[in-house]
Picture 1: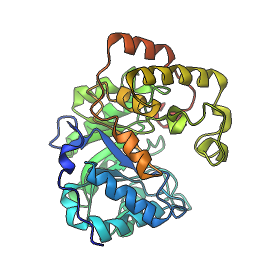
Picture 2 (picture 1 turned 180 degrees about the horizontal axis):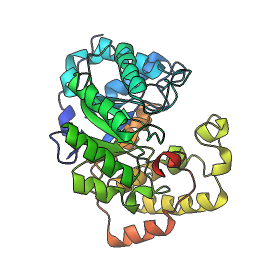
Picture 3 (picture 1 turned 30 degrees about the horizontal axis):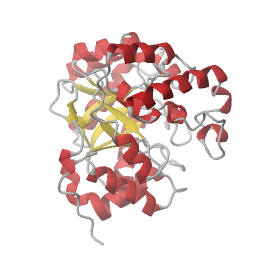
Picture 4 (picture 1 turned 90 degrees about the vertical axis):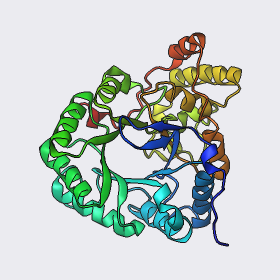
Amino acid sequence: MTYVAAADRYSRLPYRRCGRSGIQLPEVSLGLWQNFGDGRPIEDQRAILRRAFDLGVTHFDLANNYGPPYGSAEINFGRVMREDLRPYRDELIISTKAGYDMWPGPYGEFGSRKYLLASLDQSLRRMGLDYVDIFYSHRFDPDTPLEETMGALDSAVRSGKALYAGISSYSAERTVEAASILRRLGTPLLIHQPSYSMLNRWIEGGLLDVLEHDGIGCIAFSPLAQGVLTGKYLGGVPSGSRASLDGSLSSDQISEPTLAHVRALAKIAEARGQTLAQLALSWALRDPRVTSVLIGASSVAQLEENLAAAGHSDFSSEELAAIDRDAVDAGINIWAASSTH
């Protein structure tokens, strides 16, 4: 059955301007970090991607090593792109990244020109695309001159293989430097992708001010704290969850003090008529400097629940004060090393 996108897709989600650029992003974007590797049926992935676009999600965020195995999320997305979404390519923002380990040896990770540009070529082949809309430096590399890393992003844009440049998990200070270098090269920094949630508020310590000053957009990843802010751990660590697998979230990070805070936040969500996940997403969007939040989705139902948070980022001062009492650091920012250099 040939896919035809919903006619009312652009009336379903609010969009926000990305910094001072010409780009607008949906308040909620779809990330393909966890649920689009080879362990998930392609038809389930197809259903999620189709439904997301039908509901107004125009931005799909990937990276070279998303899967598992590495590269499989891009391959699977490329298949759905080819079979379903190809007629809508000019309506989509597709991003990918390079910075974490992708292949063996010294040229398979971090921020060298060789790694970044080779990785971009590989990503384009896997997805069957001529270009991506945003190409990110996925993390700061303390051992490579920032001029080299930013120069590679500039080259990616000038070659036509990317339309915009982005960075992820850079500190406020390094973001100032990166933006300055790119500005001199003539390729403005479009967007920063940091981790941000009610349990991981590090960007409030200066990064948001930098982004606002320089007109750079902000798209928050892990706004649900890798599932901790969905409520799934309130009764313990369920089998099959990220924490049970000790992957990007370990069971010892789900402490009783953290769960006490999450329970309190769940009560606030209930009083607002939201699920805990919806509260977490709405809260992250309360600051107009946050352009979009990235969600994952393992099912269409989960996707729909999370997208329902869009357009509900108004909070009373009393609600914000109550949230602040329990929106405290939980020690789950596993990307902190990149943003402390």
